[in-house]
Amino acid sequence: MIQTTAKLHRQAVCISPNIASVHVQHGAACRRPPVGSAVNHPLLIREEDPQVRGPTGDILLLPIMEFAGKDISSWFDPKTEDILKYVDPLTSCVAYYTPRGRFLHTPPTGPRSDWDGDIGQPWWKDRRYEVGLLSAKTRWIRVVNTLTSQEQRLEVCSEENLNEILQRYLCYNSHARSYTWKYNGAVLDMNKTLSENNVPDDDLELEQLRLDRDAFTPAILLHYNDDLTEG
Image 1: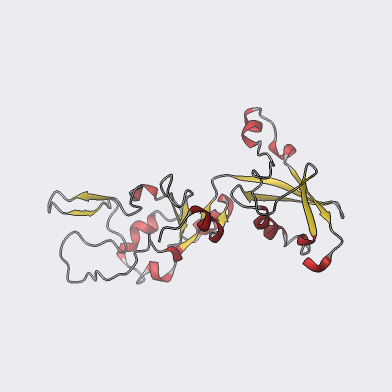
Image 2: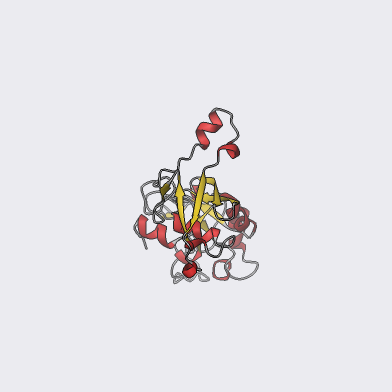
């Protein structure tokens, strides 16, 4: 199930905190994988999916519903990415550590006739329920169409490359692929991120200087190629 970081970054969608809040309202929760693992950003786990929900009214959903929209990183072992475990003092057996109560897909501490151990992949390991990668840092840019002088402000994820940003911008200009994207006179590599294209992110410095970052938002200039074949 573990993939390389590069592969995963290209497959998963990067999500800003503002977009994540929409998923939060629908019961999603965040899990932050360990530093150095294949995924180095919090994951949004979709807990409203029917397979995760299970039967309506299942008491095992209560701990999950209680933490819907919150960071549940503390539930997991950073090395194994599995639920934390402990030695039960009553049975001397290793069991899942669930101080908020047993939840969906965690086995009972003792033998039970109503427990089916053949549950397949538990919800916290099933990649199908990942909404995307929560961005470690978002930033604002101005996309300026030099042909029409139209300007659009976009909040983008620092992990996104220019092609992914272009996809966001298509709703404002369906012919955006017919333009050359430039910053400070240099043509941008659409397969690289803003930082890799030397487009600075001065948010921290501006905050320290108590300056309005909106007044210093970098401008990406779009130069028309006189070619509508990329419509």
